[in-house]
Length: 153
Image (tube, rainbow, N blue to C red; front, side, top):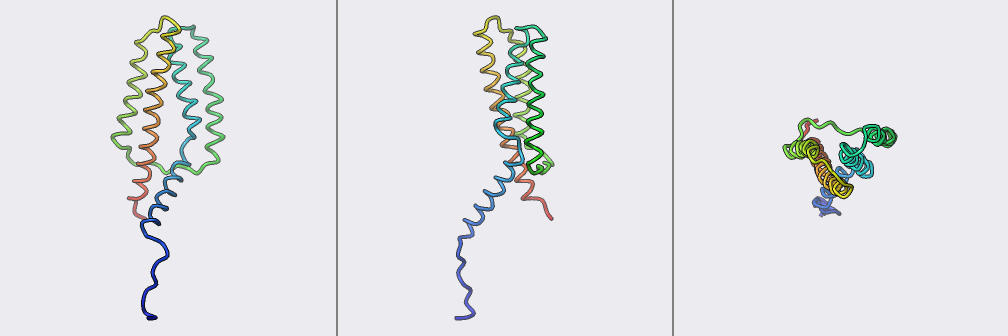
């Protein structure tokens, strides 16, 4: 009886799930907070909507709001752990990045003539940009975790 192995107290699948959750939480903590991403997307959508509707000093004034946004990013990110560099982004990440760039280029062809059209343009730009950036963020975290699991020490 003394040479029998004691039964483990925990299920190995549960332990692996806890490790996976912990690594996902760590990878999430290295990225910019969602509030920052939301403010950045709203600023991009606002600037892209105002181009062609108002004068350039107004557009540049709104664009200058990126300065406090960059300061916020710097202050938040200096307290967070440094993100693991990703060796190769996935095709999905690159696809969403190209969709984001294509959307921002094509939206320039839509010249809003009224504030109702400008509101519709803002909602469209914000929705597509938020979708692309949130998917890019999710794929970057997934790629970072995959790269970390595959890296040999």
